[in-house]
Image (cartoon, rainbow, N blue to C red):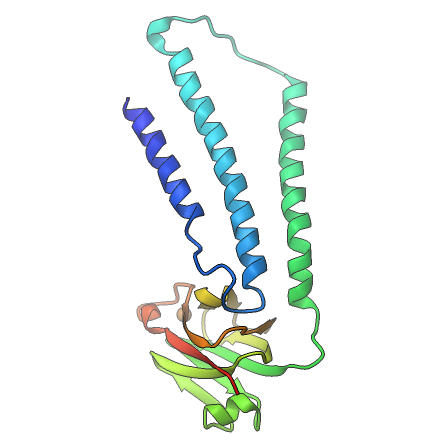
Length: 227
Ligand SMILES: [Cu+2]
């Protein structure tokens, strides 16, 4: 009984997680694809999880000690080995094929863009806007902004940005949940990413890589404005 309750609890948590992303079509040029991939991954994982849980519960009852059912050890069952290896390969290939178009969209250089350089520090973000750009004018800056915490960076709706991101000390991760945007800031390298905000609004960002004692202070807001 206890085990069945545990199983039920896990199923309920799984279902809650499926219904989690609520901001479906909003945000950025990548929101739709990212949420779609997340949902497919979640659905496949949930089905697999339910299947394995089902088998587990079945085995618990069928081979219960009190029932004294005869058991034997299965050895060298090549057919089974091949079957589950193939199923795993198929699932991974399916995930890969689904992901390729989105990856292509992320890495294909757009015709025009503005560069936004982000540097993660312990414990703040530094943003470099292109001098003279609309974003630089909106932020009233010609060079860069430093955010200790809770600051607001203004960006332009519909403008494609190339994010160039690095870390100054340790690994940080720039995370804007409602724009489905998350890139690691790794010292010694620049990670690149193209994206466009499609809807005006205020989006909270944070650091998604635990980087030290004041990690929680690395949040702020992106205010997407129409010009
Ligand atoms: Cu950090």
